[in-house]
Image (cartoon, rainbow, N blue to C red; front, side, top):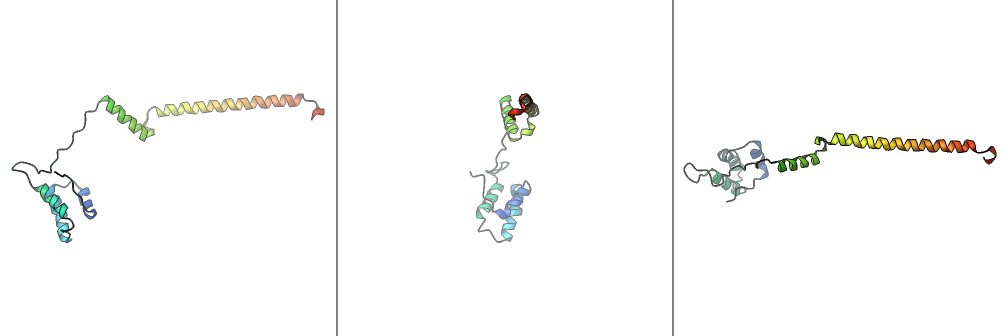
Length: 138
């Protein structure tokens, strides 16, 4: 049994605007289709709406009725997998990120400080050698 049907773009907003029952959908969309004289173009949709309203028997639902799926029970593996996906897609939600950022900043600052010290020591050594040179070598 096919449980879906193509809906022409002109009628999609009616279905997206609210959760219509089959009867409401047939009344709203079906009447629009008839008023706009598009029965021939929308024959599949009209048939689908009629079948969706037809009950299989007394006290039974339509043959198109579907039970809503149940969500799986959340276990630790599923929750951790979901959390990893969320943290990958939204890094700002990662609780460990601020600590990691602080560590990276501290490492880069220590590299900068070490580079400045090395440059200062080299400059001082160059000045000493320049000061120790006799004026005749200049």
